[in-house]
Amino acid sequence: MLHALINIFILMVLIDAVISFVPNLNVQRHPLVIQLRKIVDVPQRPIRELLPPNIPFDPSPLIIILVLRMVEAMI
Image 1 (cartoon, rainbow, N blue to C red):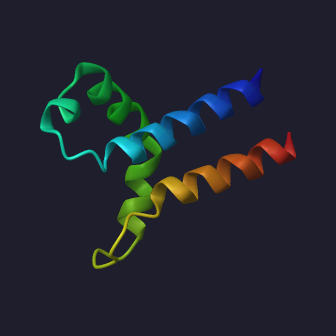
Image 2 (tube, helix red, strand yellow):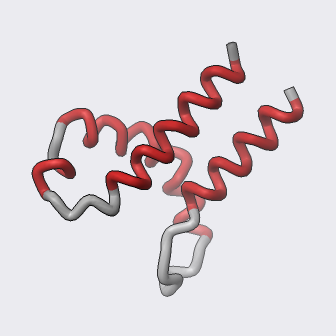
């Protein structure tokens, strides 16, 4: 069951990363997208604070996915 939860959270992180590239403001303001961002932002915020501010892209989704896959492999 924990594997399923990890996979669902990884899917949520991927969906959030893809939606962040959508330039349509109506999509960004959709209530589901707002809730998704609130959930996914919890682990991403500390990672973003550790990264330098001048990097050209946000690697926090990739770092979260890698960490979750490592945790999943240890279970």
